Amino acid sequence: MSDSTQPEASAKVAALVYNPIKVDLDAIKAVVAAEEKAAGWGETLYFETSVEDPGQGATKRALEAGADMVIVAGGDGTVRAAAEAIHDSDAALALLPSGTGNLLARNLDLTLDDLEHSIHSAFTGRDREIDLGMIDIRSGESATTSHVFLVMAGLGLDAKMLANTDEELKKKVGWLAYVGAIFKALTDKNELRVRYKLDSGRVKNVRAHTIIVGNCGSLQANVLLLPEAAVDDGEFDILILRPENPFHWVQILFKIIWENGVLMRTKLGRKMPMKDVTALNYVKGKELTLKLSRAEEIELDGDGMGTAVAVKVRIKPGGLTVRVPQDA
Image (cartoon, rainbow, N blue to C red):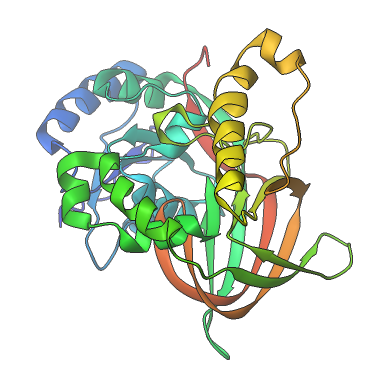
Protein backbone atom coordinates (compact mmCIF):
# COMPACT_ATOMS: atom_id res chain seq x y z
CA MET A 1 0.00 0.00 0.00
CA SER A 2 1.32 3.44 -0.87
CA ASP A 3 -1.29 5.84 0.55
CA SER A 4 0.10 9.37 0.85
CA THR A 5 -0.41 11.90 3.64
CA GLN A 6 -3.12 14.55 3.52
CA PRO A 7 -2.14 17.64 1.49
CA GLU A 8 -2.40 21.31 2.24
CA ALA A 9 -5.81 22.82 1.48
CA SER A 10 -4.47 25.76 -0.54
CA ALA A 11 -4.65 24.09 -3.96
CA LYS A 12 -6.78 21.53 -5.71
CA VAL A 13 -5.49 18.01 -5.23
CA ALA A 14 -5.83 14.89 -7.35
CA ALA A 15 -5.61 11.30 -6.22
CA LEU A 16 -4.62 8.42 -8.45
CA VAL A 17 -6.24 5.04 -7.78
CA TYR A 18 -4.29 2.38 -9.63
CA ASN A 19 -4.22 -1.34 -10.28
CA PRO A 20 -0.56 -2.26 -9.65
CA ILE A 21 -0.75 -5.20 -12.04
CA LYS A 22 -1.75 -3.07 -15.02
CA VAL A 23 0.33 0.11 -14.75
CA ASP A 24 3.90 1.39 -14.71
CA LEU A 25 3.65 3.55 -11.60
CA ASP A 26 7.04 5.24 -12.01
CA ALA A 27 6.14 6.38 -15.53
CA ILE A 28 2.77 7.67 -14.32
CA LYS A 29 4.31 9.59 -11.42
CA ALA A 30 6.76 11.34 -13.72
CA VAL A 31 4.00 12.60 -16.03
CA VAL A 32 1.66 13.50 -13.16
CA ALA A 33 4.38 15.55 -11.41
CA ALA A 34 4.90 17.67 -14.52
CA GLU A 35 1.18 18.14 -15.28
CA GLU A 36 0.08 18.94 -11.72
CA LYS A 37 2.78 21.60 -11.44
CA ALA A 38 1.89 23.16 -14.79
CA ALA A 39 -1.80 23.26 -13.86
CA GLY A 40 -1.18 24.68 -10.37
CA TRP A 41 -2.50 21.65 -8.50
CA GLY A 42 -1.09 20.28 -5.25
CA GLU A 43 0.89 17.07 -4.93
CA THR A 44 -1.08 14.08 -6.13
CA LEU A 45 -1.97 11.27 -3.71
CA TYR A 46 -1.62 7.59 -4.65
CA PHE A 47 -3.85 4.71 -3.60
CA GLU A 48 -3.33 1.11 -4.66
CA THR A 49 -6.09 -1.41 -5.34
CA SER A 50 -5.88 -5.08 -4.39
CA VAL A 51 -7.72 -8.35 -4.95
CA GLU A 52 -9.68 -7.70 -1.77
CA ASP A 53 -10.34 -4.05 -2.70
CA PRO A 54 -10.79 -3.57 -6.47
CA GLY A 55 -11.21 0.18 -6.03
CA GLN A 56 -14.09 1.17 -3.76
CA GLY A 57 -11.96 1.34 -0.59
CA ALA A 58 -9.03 3.06 -2.30
CA THR A 59 -11.35 5.70 -3.76
CA LYS A 60 -13.04 6.30 -0.40
CA ARG A 61 -9.64 6.86 1.21
CA ALA A 62 -8.77 9.30 -1.59
CA LEU A 63 -11.95 11.27 -0.96
CA GLU A 64 -11.38 11.28 2.80
CA ALA A 65 -7.89 12.67 2.14
CA GLY A 66 -9.44 15.63 0.31
CA ALA A 67 -9.11 14.70 -3.37
CA ASP A 68 -10.96 17.00 -5.78
CA MET A 69 -10.39 14.58 -8.65
CA VAL A 70 -9.75 10.84 -8.72
CA ILE A 71 -7.74 9.54 -11.66
CA VAL A 72 -8.39 5.85 -12.20
CA ALA A 73 -5.60 3.80 -13.77
CA GLY A 74 -6.96 0.33 -14.40
CA GLY A 75 -9.47 -1.66 -16.38
CA ASP A 76 -13.25 -1.44 -16.56
CA GLY A 77 -13.63 -3.20 -13.22
CA THR A 78 -11.44 -0.64 -11.44
CA VAL A 79 -13.32 2.24 -13.09
CA ARG A 80 -16.69 0.80 -12.05
CA ALA A 81 -15.48 0.23 -8.48
CA ALA A 82 -14.19 3.80 -8.24
CA ALA A 83 -17.45 5.20 -9.63
CA GLU A 84 -19.34 3.24 -6.98
CA ALA A 85 -17.48 5.19 -4.30
CA ILE A 86 -17.26 8.62 -5.95
CA HIS A 87 -20.70 9.25 -7.44
CA ASP A 88 -22.22 10.75 -4.29
CA SER A 89 -19.28 13.14 -3.77
CA ASP A 90 -18.31 16.48 -5.33
CA ALA A 91 -15.16 15.02 -6.87
CA ALA A 92 -14.68 14.27 -10.55
CA LEU A 93 -13.44 11.03 -12.03
CA ALA A 94 -10.69 11.00 -14.68
CA LEU A 95 -9.64 8.00 -16.75
CA LEU A 96 -6.19 6.63 -17.46
CA PRO A 97 -7.24 3.62 -19.59
CA SER A 98 -5.14 0.63 -18.57
CA GLY A 99 -7.23 -2.48 -19.21
CA THR A 100 -8.35 -4.89 -21.92
CA GLY A 101 -11.66 -3.26 -22.80
CA ASN A 102 -11.56 0.37 -21.60
CA LEU A 103 -15.22 0.52 -22.58
CA LEU A 104 -16.19 3.79 -20.88
CA ALA A 105 -13.15 5.52 -22.37
CA ARG A 106 -14.09 4.23 -25.82
CA ASN A 107 -17.67 5.45 -25.48
CA LEU A 108 -16.44 8.88 -24.39
CA ASP A 109 -14.02 8.95 -27.37
CA LEU A 110 -11.06 9.36 -25.06
CA THR A 111 -7.52 8.66 -26.18
CA LEU A 112 -6.27 5.15 -25.43
CA ASP A 113 -2.66 4.09 -24.85
CA ASP A 114 -1.44 7.67 -24.48
CA LEU A 115 -0.31 8.33 -20.91
CA GLU A 116 0.75 11.93 -21.48
CA HIS A 117 -2.51 12.94 -23.19
CA SER A 118 -4.71 11.23 -20.59
CA ILE A 119 -2.97 12.88 -17.65
CA HIS A 120 -2.87 16.26 -19.40
CA SER A 121 -6.62 16.00 -20.04
CA ALA A 122 -7.26 15.17 -16.39
CA PHE A 123 -5.52 18.30 -15.12
CA THR A 124 -6.55 20.73 -17.87
CA GLY A 125 -9.85 19.30 -19.09
CA ARG A 126 -13.46 20.11 -18.28
CA ASP A 127 -16.15 18.36 -16.28
CA ARG A 128 -18.86 16.40 -18.05
CA GLU A 129 -21.85 14.83 -16.35
CA ILE A 130 -22.84 11.37 -17.54
CA ASP A 131 -25.60 9.00 -16.51
CA LEU A 132 -25.04 6.22 -14.03
CA GLY A 133 -26.70 2.83 -13.85
CA MET A 134 -27.89 1.84 -10.38
CA ILE A 135 -28.65 -1.84 -9.82
CA ASP A 136 -29.93 -4.03 -7.01
CA ILE A 137 -29.10 -7.72 -7.41
CA ARG A 138 -30.87 -10.39 -5.38
CA SER A 139 -28.89 -13.61 -5.46
CA GLY A 140 -31.07 -15.64 -3.12
CA GLU A 141 -34.10 -15.47 -0.89
CA SER A 142 -32.86 -12.43 1.04
CA ALA A 143 -29.32 -11.54 -0.10
CA THR A 144 -29.46 -8.27 -2.05
CA THR A 145 -26.46 -6.14 -3.05
CA SER A 146 -26.43 -2.69 -4.64
CA HIS A 147 -23.94 -1.56 -7.28
CA VAL A 148 -23.42 0.93 -10.09
CA PHE A 149 -22.43 0.39 -13.69
CA LEU A 150 -21.25 2.74 -16.41
CA VAL A 151 -21.49 0.75 -19.62
CA MET A 152 -23.74 -2.32 -19.53
CA ALA A 153 -25.39 -4.87 -17.29
CA GLY A 154 -26.03 -8.25 -18.86
CA LEU A 155 -27.82 -11.53 -18.24
CA GLY A 156 -27.42 -14.54 -20.50
CA LEU A 157 -24.85 -14.95 -23.26
CA ASP A 158 -22.42 -12.19 -22.27
CA ALA A 159 -22.48 -13.11 -18.57
CA LYS A 160 -21.92 -16.79 -19.38
CA MET A 161 -19.15 -15.80 -21.78
CA LEU A 162 -17.35 -13.94 -19.03
CA ALA A 163 -17.82 -16.84 -16.63
CA ASN A 164 -16.24 -19.14 -19.24
CA THR A 165 -13.27 -16.88 -20.00
CA ASP A 166 -9.83 -18.06 -18.91
CA GLU A 167 -8.37 -15.18 -16.90
CA GLU A 168 -4.77 -16.25 -17.47
CA LEU A 169 -5.35 -16.39 -21.22
CA LYS A 170 -7.03 -12.97 -21.05
CA LYS A 171 -3.85 -11.53 -19.50
CA LYS A 172 -1.78 -12.93 -22.38
CA VAL A 173 -3.92 -12.27 -25.47
CA GLY A 174 -6.47 -9.68 -24.31
CA TRP A 175 -9.96 -9.69 -25.85
CA LEU A 176 -9.13 -12.69 -28.10
CA ALA A 177 -9.51 -14.84 -24.98
CA TYR A 178 -13.25 -14.22 -25.25
CA VAL A 179 -13.55 -16.04 -28.59
CA GLY A 180 -13.57 -19.55 -27.17
CA ALA A 181 -15.86 -18.48 -24.36
CA ILE A 182 -18.33 -17.04 -26.88
CA PHE A 183 -18.63 -20.35 -28.75
CA LYS A 184 -19.07 -22.21 -25.47
CA ALA A 185 -21.83 -19.82 -24.43
CA LEU A 186 -23.54 -20.09 -27.82
CA THR A 187 -23.87 -23.86 -27.41
CA ASP A 188 -25.70 -23.38 -24.10
CA LYS A 189 -29.33 -24.28 -24.86
CA ASN A 190 -30.70 -22.84 -21.65
CA GLU A 191 -32.78 -19.69 -22.09
CA LEU A 192 -33.76 -16.96 -19.68
CA ARG A 193 -37.36 -17.08 -18.51
CA VAL A 194 -38.16 -13.65 -17.17
CA ARG A 195 -41.04 -11.62 -15.78
CA TYR A 196 -40.25 -7.94 -16.28
CA LYS A 197 -41.68 -4.48 -15.85
CA LEU A 198 -40.34 -1.48 -17.76
CA ASP A 199 -41.06 1.92 -16.20
CA SER A 200 -44.78 2.15 -15.40
CA GLY A 201 -45.80 -0.47 -17.96
CA ARG A 202 -47.52 -3.74 -17.20
CA VAL A 203 -45.70 -6.89 -16.15
CA LYS A 204 -44.73 -9.08 -19.13
CA ASN A 205 -43.17 -12.49 -19.64
CA VAL A 206 -40.34 -13.16 -22.05
CA ARG A 207 -38.04 -16.00 -23.01
CA ALA A 208 -34.66 -14.72 -24.15
CA HIS A 209 -31.11 -15.80 -24.82
CA THR A 210 -29.62 -12.52 -23.57
CA ILE A 211 -30.81 -9.30 -21.95
CA ILE A 212 -28.50 -6.28 -21.89
CA VAL A 213 -29.23 -2.96 -20.21
CA GLY A 214 -26.91 -0.37 -21.71
CA ASN A 215 -25.87 3.11 -20.63
CA CYS A 216 -23.72 3.42 -23.77
CA GLY A 217 -23.44 1.34 -26.89
CA SER A 218 -19.92 0.53 -28.15
CA LEU A 219 -17.89 -2.56 -27.35
CA GLN A 220 -14.39 -3.67 -28.27
CA ALA A 221 -13.33 -4.15 -31.89
CA ASN A 222 -15.57 -1.19 -32.89
CA VAL A 223 -18.76 -3.23 -32.32
CA LEU A 224 -21.77 -0.93 -31.92
CA LEU A 225 -24.21 -3.07 -29.95
CA LEU A 226 -26.69 -0.33 -29.03
CA PRO A 227 -26.68 2.23 -31.88
CA GLU A 228 -28.98 4.79 -30.22
CA ALA A 229 -27.45 4.66 -26.74
CA ALA A 230 -25.95 7.85 -25.34
CA VAL A 231 -24.16 8.19 -22.06
CA ASP A 232 -26.03 11.38 -21.12
CA ASP A 233 -29.57 10.96 -22.48
CA GLY A 234 -31.19 10.05 -19.15
CA GLU A 235 -32.39 6.60 -20.18
CA PHE A 236 -31.23 3.05 -20.81
CA ASP A 237 -31.18 1.22 -24.13
CA ILE A 238 -32.21 -2.38 -23.56
CA LEU A 239 -31.41 -5.25 -25.91
CA ILE A 240 -33.30 -8.54 -25.87
CA LEU A 241 -31.93 -11.41 -27.98
CA ARG A 242 -34.33 -14.24 -28.77
CA PRO A 243 -32.74 -16.47 -31.44
CA GLU A 244 -34.51 -19.77 -32.06
CA ASN A 245 -32.41 -21.17 -34.90
CA PRO A 246 -29.12 -20.58 -36.80
CA PHE A 247 -30.84 -18.23 -39.26
CA HIS A 248 -31.78 -15.94 -36.39
CA TRP A 249 -28.11 -15.78 -35.37
CA VAL A 250 -27.23 -14.77 -38.94
CA GLN A 251 -29.84 -11.99 -38.73
CA ILE A 252 -28.43 -10.79 -35.42
CA LEU A 253 -24.84 -10.77 -36.65
CA PHE A 254 -25.85 -8.91 -39.85
CA LYS A 255 -27.75 -6.34 -37.80
CA ILE A 256 -24.96 -5.74 -35.28
CA ILE A 257 -21.93 -5.99 -37.56
CA TRP A 258 -23.22 -4.45 -40.81
CA GLU A 259 -26.13 -2.16 -39.96
CA ASN A 260 -24.91 -1.01 -36.53
CA GLY A 261 -21.18 -1.31 -37.13
CA VAL A 262 -21.00 0.16 -40.64
CA LEU A 263 -24.18 1.90 -41.82
CA MET A 264 -25.06 3.64 -38.55
CA ARG A 265 -21.58 5.17 -38.44
CA THR A 266 -22.08 7.05 -41.73
CA LYS A 267 -24.34 10.01 -42.53
CA LEU A 268 -25.79 8.25 -45.59
CA GLY A 269 -26.26 4.97 -43.74
CA ARG A 270 -28.24 6.62 -40.95
CA LYS A 271 -30.77 7.82 -43.54
CA MET A 272 -31.36 4.33 -44.89
CA PRO A 273 -34.33 2.31 -43.56
CA MET A 274 -33.26 -0.44 -41.16
CA LYS A 275 -35.18 -3.71 -41.09
CA ASP A 276 -36.47 -5.02 -37.78
CA VAL A 277 -35.10 -8.39 -36.73
CA THR A 278 -37.47 -10.85 -35.08
CA ALA A 279 -34.79 -12.28 -32.82
CA LEU A 280 -33.47 -8.90 -31.68
CA ASN A 281 -35.51 -6.22 -29.93
CA TYR A 282 -34.50 -2.77 -28.70
CA VAL A 283 -36.47 -0.84 -26.08
CA LYS A 284 -35.74 2.24 -23.96
CA GLY A 285 -36.56 3.05 -20.37
CA LYS A 286 -35.48 4.51 -17.06
CA GLU A 287 -36.29 1.66 -14.71
CA LEU A 288 -36.42 -2.09 -15.28
CA THR A 289 -37.38 -4.85 -12.85
CA LEU A 290 -36.61 -8.48 -13.73
CA LYS A 291 -37.58 -11.70 -11.95
CA LEU A 292 -35.96 -14.87 -13.26
CA SER A 293 -37.25 -18.42 -13.08
CA ARG A 294 -33.87 -19.58 -11.73
CA ALA A 295 -30.52 -18.11 -10.75
CA GLU A 296 -28.61 -16.79 -13.79
CA GLU A 297 -25.12 -15.36 -14.31
CA ILE A 298 -24.98 -11.55 -14.33
CA GLU A 299 -22.21 -9.13 -15.34
CA LEU A 300 -21.59 -5.42 -14.88
CA ASP A 301 -19.18 -3.59 -17.20
CA GLY A 302 -17.48 -6.85 -18.10
CA ASP A 303 -17.10 -8.18 -14.56
CA GLY A 304 -18.95 -11.28 -13.45
CA MET A 305 -21.09 -10.55 -10.39
CA GLY A 306 -22.22 -14.09 -9.59
CA THR A 307 -25.84 -15.09 -10.07
CA ALA A 308 -29.16 -13.30 -9.74
CA VAL A 309 -32.76 -14.38 -9.25
CA ALA A 310 -34.10 -10.82 -9.40
CA VAL A 311 -32.72 -7.48 -10.59
CA LYS A 312 -33.87 -3.87 -10.38
CA VAL A 313 -32.11 -1.34 -12.60
CA ARG A 314 -32.65 2.43 -12.64
CA ILE A 315 -30.90 5.34 -14.29
CA LYS A 316 -29.37 8.23 -12.36
CA PRO A 317 -29.22 11.07 -14.91
CA GLY A 318 -25.98 13.04 -14.68
CA GLY A 319 -25.01 10.87 -11.75
CA LEU A 320 -21.26 10.94 -12.35
CA THR A 321 -18.86 13.77 -13.20
CA VAL A 322 -15.99 12.77 -15.47
CA ARG A 323 -13.06 14.77 -16.83
CA VAL A 324 -12.76 15.06 -20.59
CA PRO A 325 -10.43 17.11 -22.82
CA GLN A 326 -11.39 20.77 -23.28
CA ASP A 327 -11.95 20.20 -27.00
CA ALA A 328 -13.96 16.97 -26.56
